[in-house]
Image (cartoon, rainbow, N blue to C red; front, top):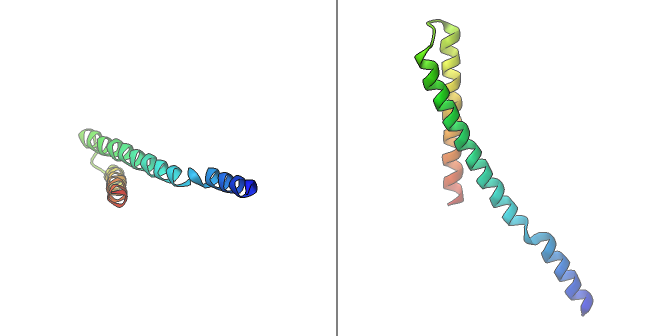
Length: 83
């Protein structure tokens, strides 16, 4: 009987925090995606102010806008899945 309680205690200790770690990881991912979204939106806006008129500058702007859209959509999609 003691052995059964001991095994149940060990099993609950090992697996008890498993789901909490997953939600913490999801929250951290959401926060990181929101942070990166904000950074790339700001980079794109700042870049537009001083942008040259050539293909490389246009490609750089498209890259910033693409990454902003990517991280913004990830943060919104993950938020919807968790709620």
